[in-house]
Image 1 (spheres, rainbow, N blue to C red):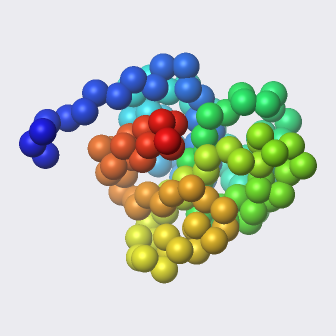
Image 2: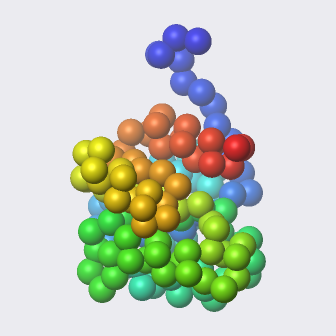
Amino acid sequence: MSKKEEIEYNFSGKRLLVVEDNKTNQLIAVSILKSAGFEIELAENGEIAVNMVKNSEQGYYDAVLMDIQMPVMNGYEAAKAIRGFDDKRKATIPIVAVTANAFEEDRKIALEAGMNGHLAKPYDIPEMLSLLDKLFNS
């Protein structure tokens, strides 16, 4: 397949929690992800996200896209809090760091915080969808 060919993904029935404090980035992410079939819920900071995952039914969210630099609780702190849940199914939910910090060191910090992947902003749509597909099908 050539690089110009686009892969068609269908994430119908999958629900993502998008944790992002910037309204413009929220709109962009929601637009991209809904067009791929995802159901989306939003949280403005890590503390809200931790509570949303904690108070949800087991398996309600399929993954979390977590901004790193946010007020109240940053993405690293939120990921660590989720990984510390007693409910192991919730504690192991796939979490992907989404950040403007795109250096290898930033990716390592995200993985050390318990995240399953790292995506750089601005959004690279094919990369984002490919990573999510790998998380769900590995």
